[in-house]
Length: 144
Ligand SMILES: [Zn+2]
Image (tube, rainbow, N blue to C red; front, side):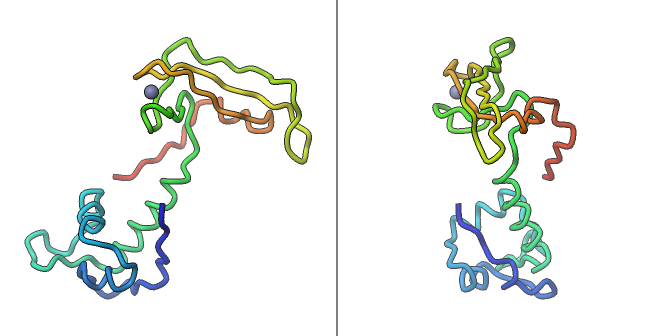
């Protein structure tokens, strides 16, 4: 995933697709996708569409943190579905591998589960210090 330097954007000016393309080299598809993903425009019917710099900055920053989102409880990355999925109920297991990992020599722990959608066995490696991965994630804030 590419990262965009939001410092290049001036919050108080508005940008057309061409302006954004000049800044980041994006193409029309990317611009359209951003709009579909919720980038706000000044006026929906305007031609060309204009996005405020401040909205662009917000949008791109949100996009960045979204990619780094930790998996919540019951969330796994399924290789087959190529996405974050829920574990099939009752299939989640937490197993110690017997190995020590990291600087602090923590017990290596694997969390396994079956994908709710396709049944593939999924594995997430955890260290015991990161057991908080396994408790309910209460601050899951997804902005739309
Ligand atoms: Zn799957």
